[in-house]
Length: 267
Image 1 (cartoon, rainbow, N blue to C red):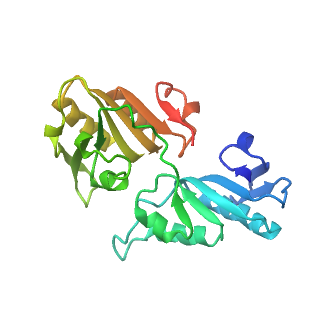
Image 2 (cartoon, helix red, strand yellow; image 1 turned 180 degrees about the vertical axis):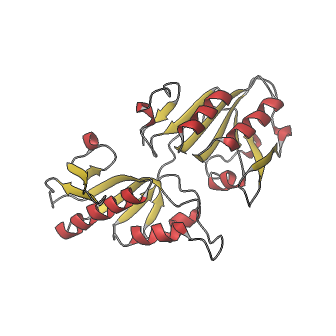
Image 3 (spheres, rainbow, N blue to C red; image 1 turned 90 degrees about the horizontal axis):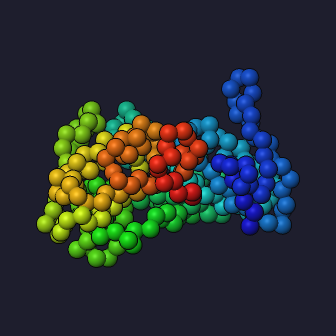
């Protein structure tokens, strides 16, 4: 299988050119395609332009008659994974319909925000979990969603810390955090790893870190988040955690100045 990597030209077996017409319309031109090989298309879908470029690429591949999979490092719209109101779009459904129209042999999505992604996209599976969790004394899930999302990772619930948060549904503002089973934490200076799929502004993880520090100021605190959206959110993590590990699913953060203390796992 050949790789067509739309996130990094140097890692791509098939070369390509991106461009934009004067009216703002994006265009793509692919290099030579060997029809004897199937193709894995690696991409980010962080915005409508990247989605449209993926659709253009798949249009070319379909006309060549080659079989292709799609590996999506980050998929926009996954947080709008249900109908909020009749005045707002079901964004994930819109995006899924676009992905389904590409008729890929299989679709892989890294760390989808919920099971709805796998339900709405045809022939879809979740990509491999990118982090190692074996070396930590405790794993901490920052909210109910994370606990449900990663319940398959560890079987020993005695080493799990669960947190809750209160969010204003009208404004989206966070107003409180708590650890629901603090009695599980035993001793001092233990290693604790907070795990989740997405960090945007970082407010949730700051509140969780403060609650964990109240439990034990000497703990060695790590956070591992697959999708990091804002540099400002990453900077907040740096201020409250001893170790921060993210991936390059949303952006090539390892190339951003000022973020060298962050461990970036390539996916």
